[in-house]
Length: 376
Image 1 (tube, one colour):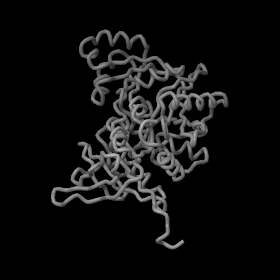
Image 2 (image 1 turned 135 degrees about the horizontal axis):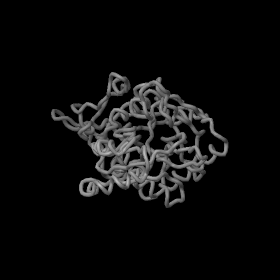
Image 3 (image 1 turned 30 degrees about the vertical axis):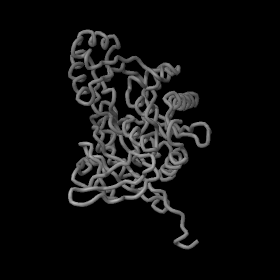
């Protein structure tokens, strides 16, 4: 086949950054995909969303986007802006600046939204892409929104018959007007508890609280990320995780080997917090497959597939479960766009299950291209 007969490459827009507190994590995810994606099969257009929400053209260079202990990457807000199509007959991205006419970046076949947290992982960007009939990797509007909200997620799990741990929801108005009742409800969970923003990830704003004297400060810390807060009873046991990948052509959704993150003692991390996840590589150890009885592994995998189905997820998700000291399994949460750097749990669990990081990228893009646009 002559060079002019070569099939056209798939054009993939990598979308990353965003307005959430997980901006730097999203940039790091994009760096990982940039390095691993098959350049012989794909042309990529890196599109960053600056912290103020501006969409800009970003250089195809992963190095400035890497997250380290001394560098928090950020999308520059002074780069040429991007005009996003909203017509179902237009898939052309255009760049613009104050000193030039709009420049065509070309048509896009699929968007890979490597966004974590609100205003990206929560159905907002997915809705924008749906308006223009643009295919994209990952879950749709409803599943993304439900998966972002830990309260709604747990309600949907429970309605599907899946076991969840005890929790208390603290909406903004209740905290401001009925704080004593909130404190009484939380005390009923027992101590310690974990206080979390309802709609954040990457362990942002999470505090472990050992007694009532630390509750108010922990709730205020969480409220800095989201005015809706979730307080969960501490579960004594181990956190076991499972990666889910959508089945193709009507086949069952696939689950990986189960994995476990162990936070090593002596590193100053009371739990798997942001620093342990992304900045202190020596603080954690991944075990995959996790050393649990086969029956527990099978149950976690079955719960993960059921959770994926309960929310109507597409593409990918990571499901986190607790394996308690009493031998029970509870679902903690689902992540519809989990951390996706080569060192993240989701790719590592698939690596241990026989799917390499580049092959995983291929699979997710193929799933997105095969999916019909519109209601489905």
